[in-house]
Image (cartoon, rainbow, N blue to C red; front, side, top):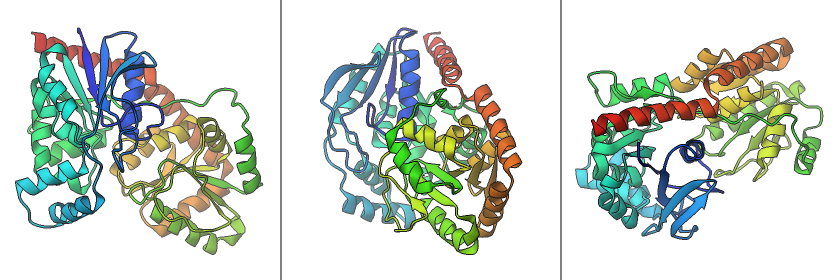
Amino acid sequence: MRRLAFVVQRYGEGVAGGSEMMCRSIAERLAPHIALDVLTTCAVDYTTWENRFPAGEEMLNGVTVRRFPVARLREWEKLASLSDRVLHQAHSEKDETDWIRAQGPLVPGLFDYLAAHREDYDLFVFFTYLYATTCFGLPLVAGRAILVPTAHDELPIYLAAYDRVFREARDLIFLTPEERHFVLRRFCFEREVGHLVGGGVEFPPDPLPGDPDWDILRARTGDSPVITYVGRVSESKGCVQLIDYFLRYIEDRPESNVKLLLAGKATIDMPAHGSILAPAFISDAVKWLALQASDVVLAPSPYESLCIAALEGWASSKPVLANGRSDVLRGQCVRSQGGLWYRDYREFRACLDKLLSEQALRAQLGRQGRGYVEKHHRWDDVAQRYLAVFEATAAEIAG
C-alpha cells in the first residue's frame, strides 16, 4: 500500500469527541509504518465550526495533517428549523441536503482536494457517517473509500441521503456486533458486509502520579462512595436522565451518602447540589485518579456505537452501571461480564443498591472487565486489525 488518507471533521490537540479521538489514536500508531495523511478542517469545536487551527500542512506526533478552512459557521436557528422538518415531517431530498449543509462542516477546499487527488491515495478512510465531510466527500472517492460509521439508532441515520453514503463506500468497519447488526438492518444489506474491528482504550499509568487538582476534588468527596461519569455532560449522552435518577436515589437512600462525579464539559444546566461534583475540566491524570477512587463507573448514554467511558472504567478495574436501552452497552456488559444495566429508575436504584453494598461483587466485575479490555481493546492490537483491513482492500483495488 503506497499511501493512505484519513478524513475526519476535526483533528488535533484539544479536540474532544469519540470518533475524532479514535481516528487520532489509529493514525498515530500506523504513521510509523505507512505513508498516511489526515485530511481535516481548521475547526476545534463542532458546535460552531469556527476556524481555530491554521490552514495548511503540519506534522503532529508523526502524522501529516492537512487542514482546510470551514466556509461558514454553524447557524443554529437554521439548523433547528431544518431539523424539525427533516426529522419529524414529510420533506424533500433537497431538504435533507440543506440539513446536511446546515449541520456542516462545509469545507470546499477539502472536497476539491479529494476530487483532484483521488488517484494519489490507495484508500480514503472516513470517520463518522453523520457530517458533511463524509456525506459530500465520500462519493468523490467512492471506489477507494472505507467508512467507519460509528453508527447508532438515532433519527438522522434514517434520512435517505445516507443510503448513498453507506452504499457507495467500498467497505465498512464496525466497532461492535450491535453496530454491525443495526447497519445491516437499517440499510437492508442482503449479505454480511464490513469488518468487525472494534476500538481501543488507553490504560491508566502504573503507578498513578499524584495531582493537586485531584487532591482538591477528593477533599470534596471525603469518605463517601463515589459514582463517576467521564465524558461530555449532555442530554444526548443520557446525563439529564442520569442526574434525575441520582437525585431521586439520594432522596430514597439518604443514608448512602453517595456522591456523583460528572467529569467532562457540560452543555446542560447543572443543578446546584452538594452531592453532585461537576468540574468544568479535568486532565487525563485527574481522570485516571478519579476512576481509581470510584466505586462505580457510569455509562448512561442511550446512543453508542462503542462506549469508551465503559472501557476506561474496566481498564481501571471498576464495575460499570450502564443504560440498558442501548443494545451496544448491554452487549459490552455481557461480553465483558463487567457490569450491570438498567432500563428505568427502579432498575437503576436496584443495581446501584447492589453495587454499593457488595464490595466483593464490585471487585469481581472490575477484574472481569479489566481482563476483557486487555484481551480485546488494546490500541496496538486494534490498530493492527485496522491495518490488515486497509491492506486487504488496497490489494483488492490494485488487483
